[in-house]
Length: 262
Ligand code: 0O2
Ligand code: 0O2
Image (cartoon, rainbow, N blue to C red; front, side):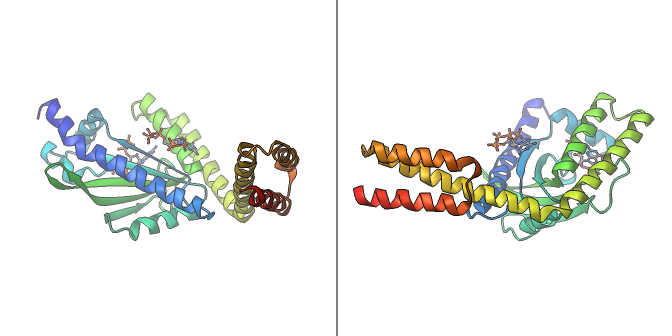
């Protein structure tokens, strides 16, 4: 196949990555809108470079005409989580979807790879609607914590630098770092409830503050300058240290004033 044809071959894979990024980022948005904790922290995605596709095909003796059936990570989606136990929730989200079918799963969270690599992989079949019909492609989800991602990103770039032949001494250090990342995930899990509570309070407060700001702006645009200035001063006082109840009181006050003038 000429390079141009290979680029055409990649079109559905590119489309799949774009669609899947949007779909999984939307899940995060949905949780946040509902003021609920999201097991998804952020999502990235990429289409494998042609050079990497050829390199991998060569390494695993995959004939070029079998790549689409045998290479599962041409479309790759990475879902990052804050805590280890979010990973299974994300896997659960994938399992219940009707727009893709799971082919198989690889649990490198429990079965840590020799390198120290940890992540949960889910390989799915995903239909892409193209100009001339539907094409089923394979896509790989890698679900991992922020600590796992930190480690894998560094290790990946070292692999790149040393062309997959990392000196033993550095490999050993990477193993130690992998253990540290594992420990970090364990410790964070132990204080998860505290962290989640703090994040939740932050979310709730910032929503109230934004509602108060809207009301102050509305008063100001109605020409009620003295009221809007007064509320702005009160808000400034509360923004840093105010309790949820105090912010709610202020919100109610701005609403009452607005009701008078609307
Ligand atoms: P926001 O508002 O920054 O969260 P594209 O969809 O094409 O725009 P692309 O090219 O896939 O995005 O970008 P990339 O580099 O893969 O990053 C995808 C998203 O992940 C971006 O957010 C980054 O901000 C976010 N991201 C990358 N690394 C981290 C990280 O370490 N921590 C956090 N919290 N987010 C990270 P968005 O979706 O562009 O929007
Ligand atoms: P990319 O695009 O460079 O990330 P393998 O036997 O590991 O070569 P296999 O059997 O196809 O690959 O599947 P596996 O083991 O599930 O690995 C698939 C992908 O997982 C890899 O893609 C990596 O992204 C990631 N991965 C697996 N092991 C490691 C590891 O030790 N370190 C890091 N950083 N990532 C790993 P590719 O092919 O490397 O492509």
